[in-house]
Image (cartoon, rainbow, N blue to C red; front, side):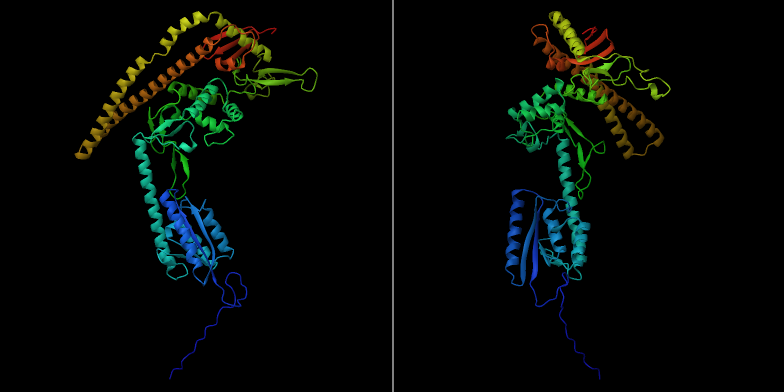
Length: 541
């Protein structure tokens, strides 16, 4: 006869986490976690309801000690990064302050399967369990992890689907020419009653000022300093301007009433990492998509100036007025400001070719200074060159205007280019339709593939040729319009000058001079922004 066994349960004597001796059965320390992904009113109501519900629910249980209701507001669940409430909860749990975590659902806890399982396993290894109310999953249960893996995967797939739907909607708006502006961080516009951008005139004046100062020779950094000194608030309503903010305004096509969409794109719905679109995805350019604050011609002129500054590897300097404006006629290098005899009573400041003492072609066998023998110039000589050259133009100002009215009209006439572009555009559309018809015909019936590929290749080459020619004409047209704007601005400066210059005018210099070319002391060419070049002899000045 089998003997019946008697089993007696021996209660634990140590705490699993702290290893402290258990003298009596303590209450379970319980916390809750709540999250919403947007700041929409409906979501915020849900957020408040979650926090209130779990706080009261835990406090009502006599076997539980309420720890805290951790929460994250308007934060995505596809990553633990940036979720301060979530990360603080995990930190406290691993520190032995929590035994059980309650949350509404798997998707509220995390939408990333890997993140979700990694955190839960780490908590479980430390004796902390999570209960998901909606799915009725307890990670302390043997089958809990299997169910959790399935539900986490479903939550992640739901997040991916939502992300794709949102992305599709945004790209549909782009393709339809709809403009999207983050008004809270954007200067000059507000959302109108019809939902479209509306100009805020007070802010628009600041935008126009920034463009004017830049075209008058100021740098983004000096403009930022000026705006800060004038106590003009930034787009984010801050006190201090930065050069990057000014530069972003100078290069944003929205201020010219145009819109380029999809400049950036999201790498993954899990990482939310934004990447610059360098051609991986299509972009959409829309002309006249909304009211313009500045003219398209002024915007193009600024972009041309930005490009030119980039090509020479520098920008107009405000502390050194002649920096990046004085070019050596011998070697093409820029002149720089030098101090001679800095520690003596003969201290002197001059402008000198930056390449003057470089060995030619980096050949140590050649003597120093062999590459460039250009003269040094004083600041007084450079100022004299400007005053003399500008006064020569002012002396014949009336004739200058009469001549330029005809010249400007001839030099900036785009009618012929416009006709060419219209014709090419029609031809390119016809060629594209022929390409499309060829592909459809090949898909409907069996064709000789050698003949088809030859025909398709010829049509495609023809299409690409016309598109390339269109691009070239468009760039040429833009260059002409930029030149017209440059000429008109130069003429406006002339009209505003009543008499001859008797002293150096820094603001007028910045607005009218493009560069100096130093050939010798007797030949310093002042090149104005309209292209006029006047040589001045500065010997003895």
